[in-house]
Length: 125
Ligand SMILES: [Mg+2]
Image (cartoon, rainbow, N blue to C red):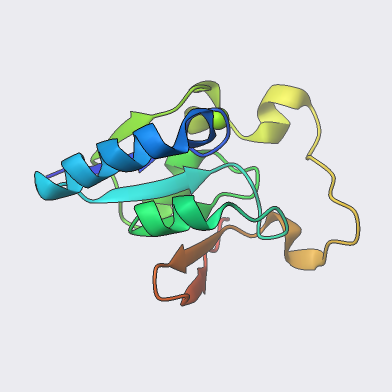
């Protein structure tokens, strides 16, 4: 069964209560819904999104598809208001990385945050 990748900005945030209800229905139907955002670890998402999703993957500007493939997710249903970031990185689209003040060197290292708070970095080559 494919996993469902639910975007955060302007997708979940457009109507968190509606999307949380959708996630609950999908989960009850046997799907695993994971949060997949272009954000990085210095741009945290809401608790509501963290709770709704099985885990949240901060792609840190990398192509979402590339990050999920690195994690072994190849069969994915995407729910995203901005699908260009599924196959392209932020830098591919905008010509530069996004900038965050006071960020550490791991700014562009994707991070998985599981519902129990466990964190796993994703190595992209
Ligand atoms: Mg979005």
